[in-house]
Image (cartoon, rainbow over all chains, first blue to last red; front, side, top):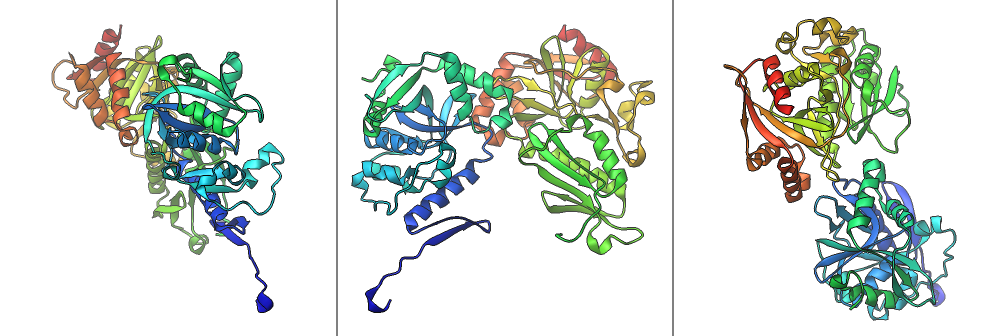
Length: 247
Length: 289
């Protein structure tokens, strides 16, 4: 403008005629668009049990991280990729109940929370310009800006599917020692697994059978996450022969 | 269609396998016939998504003395006719044919099935092979009804789930069961014009079965000469025949074949030839133990 003033305008994203997001950053809009695309792509993949979970492959086998809505989950997956794991999914993983394998739900990149990008300075992404209150966890996922990050930007490969070797329940405790612990209370983690099944409305009671069988046959651990980077390195060093004890 | 009211006389949700439909009709006769046909699948509550199925006369035809009725499925006009019976025929065919296309959480075979004592007899077969008549014959012999058309295999447990729609028989099939026609309730209103007859399990009478693993797989063939014969089929051949009868194997791919292999390895499989419907049912019931 005259006088050298710069106006920075917000861009708007519309989906099926509805405005679903607006932001100054096109990178942020791209993240929101990809998140919407991911939801649309995966909505009807009911030939799998679809889970809200991160997924990585280590040594040819899959480690799946079922979780309630948690914007930091993709950052944990990204940290694992940086530490040498291969990529299956950042927040949605398809589980094949026939062969007990974890499948990538889409070929889309990770969608990392913008605030977590500070943990990945090598990506050279812009910092978010305005602080965002995390607020009510139920509303977090709707408000949180996401930025697309390709696995190869973290030096990782994509894996279409891998046999399921372990289920790891992430538990964020900032400042705590990042560690793996045995799963103690069966009922608690059964409910945690069920809560992560996104197409439970399709599978109904069969979801319970599936979750039960999964926890009885696949090693399960709790991952206390004090540091995203430390959690990523711990996951990437997963040793299947030790039933989950890092090498 | 924002300002046009088709004059719905019925609007209900139905869940067939895992596919939910929202069926509305502005034609009372078609509404009644569809309601009877899908009664077992009616949902008491509103699901979060349903495939819309609408039957109505478009606005430009609504006031005509003999309007043309149109069938819309998923907002796509599928058929139109001044004959309500023809529209009903297409509506039934469209809804039932959408089920294997849209259902993904089961591996679905073109198969009948009956159940007894926690074991399912799965009957994969093409049309006109005597599958539905065999199902009715087995219901007469104490089996519970699972399906006459869709064998729904659960990928989690490998069990066969019921799809208990009314059994469709043509007049020739019905002739094999003297006395059954007197117990049927399907010739109501517009449905009296349908070419087939529909047998509910309670007409036989027989209960609806529960979910159970396949203990026996019978492949009926359209060869009715001579006495009925059951010839053993290898597990590999059974997998091949089941795969050929699968509607949605393409969604499962290799894992679907592995699932069928597990089904076949846990069941005795036979080819069924010869005999009348009742004679076949007697032989199969005896073999099932």
